[in-house]
Length: 257
Ligand SMILES: NC(=O)c1ccc[n+]([C@@H]2O[C@H](COP(=O)([O-])OP(=O)(O)OC[C@H]3O[C@@H](n4cnc5c(N)ncnc54)[C@H](OP(=O)(O)O)[C@@H]3O)[C@@H](O)[C@H]2O)c1
Image (tube, rainbow, N blue to C red; front, side, top):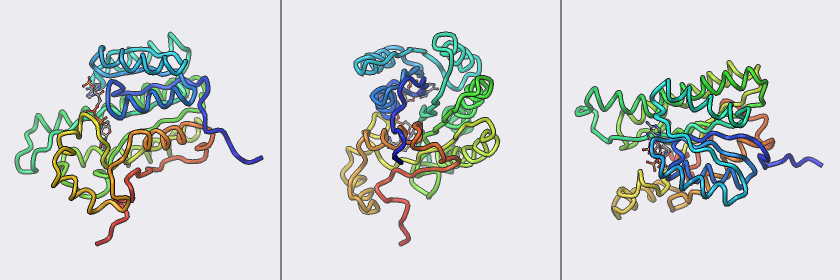
């Protein structure tokens, strides 16, 4: 009667940073929910492994080695998806990295690398895919993986925090400009999830106990707990949600004291 679909059957999704960690989980999760998935990162072998996992779900995968900081690469990969599959319905901007230098020690080169990888890439991907969605009158969904570090002050470093905060604001402005084209733009703000990016930190008992002390659910996240929110925002169930950031954080960002 009222329940809309939480599936994305026969939709075409593009996930950046799909070679490992969160991106791999999101790519496979979107395939489980019914989508074919284009997989982007710089490392072909990693993407081929993700592709095998997507295909195990009975969906198609397209392996597109891409440096998402490079405009020509981004354009070429978006064109390849459209050439192969005709459209793009869902874009997940997930590729990201961090260098945890303290503010007084951040070099110009580190700053630029973090900005390009986390922020410029997400903007260029959104722009190139947004053009396709507008032209093809697709009911598009764009979801960027920000971080709680874009909302509260953490020990993750100033450059990383700046990119993730900018992503949240970029989400709002793209939602404002592209709502008229039926494109929903949202972001997700994860707290800690175990991936190659965080595994060293999460192997440190003192660090983990500090994390859990500010996490009402008293545990780090499991990757399927990010897949659910991303599939929701990609599906009919999320059709009236736009410009928002959903914090998937075990309650971490509600803290006062
Ligand atoms: N893990 C967490 O707890 C956590 C929490 C909050 C937010 N996040 C965010 O979630 C996203 C994924 O994190 P993760 O933990 O899954 O990281 P990860 O395990 O290090 O994976 C990062 C992915 O991004 C790709 N990537 C990096 N630079 C790229 C570039 N220039 N061009 C194309 N692909 C690139 C990597 O592939 P290649 O290196 O092969 O290119 C890899 O596939 C990031 O944006 C991160 O900031 C993570």
